[in-house]
Length: 112
Image (cartoon, rainbow, N blue to C red):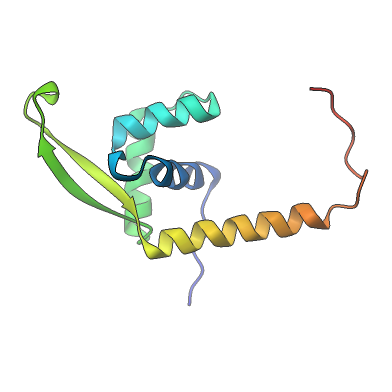
């Protein structure tokens, strides 16, 4: 099986979709990314990442119901696929392995 690699931003977007669950759509994802990371991102960057992740098979999307607050427009709702879930677990496993490979006291101390 060919391995798919994610950039940091794609990984954050995929994680955010997982965090939001059924309510994951462009604006909510953008707001949650800002809240969780303190990083201001544009809606167009989020939409581009969502599109790439969907093309890679890590997300699926469907159109939600129209709502009055959106002037009758429908939201495109995203969910993490089995491949997306597996990818996130693989990334976490690899990062955990690397963190556990760091020798004690080999990183400089930081003050918080």
